[in-house]
Length: 150
Image 1 (cartoon, rainbow, N blue to C red):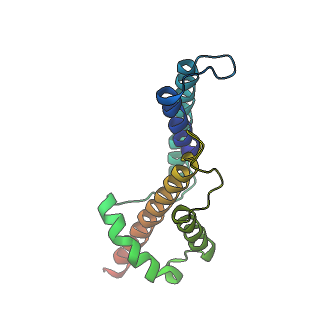
Image 2 (tube, rainbow, N blue to C red):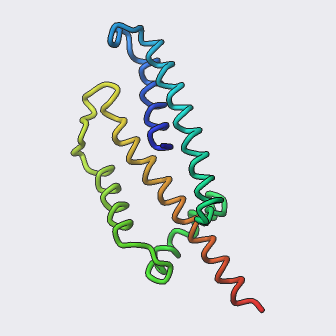
Image 3 (tube, rainbow, N blue to C red):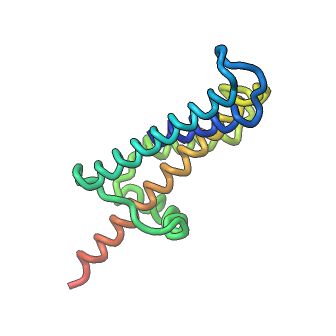
């Protein structure tokens, strides 16, 4: 839901900025504002759902700042088998990187507003996925350190 909210925000903001003609008989300002409102609702729901999953579901919440997570990412990749990071997750990250770097896109950049949103969406997903995984790895690392201390 968070990813959907970010995508709706990007589309709504770009509609407000660049769109001149009506969309489905509605002025672009109304469509842009409606998309931004839907984006805010989606983001709020996504954040609430994620926090509930962390507290009720027992899933560990990620810890550490952005800098700590960035520093932990190489350690995570080195100790991925011990940590239990699935190979499918590494493949997803690899495909996302290849998609961002490659000149071939599902939606070409020639389309004025929509062309860049697929790249932005993949980039947002990749960064949030890496950040969450690194934060959970930091949590795992800290729990292992606590177990070793008497």
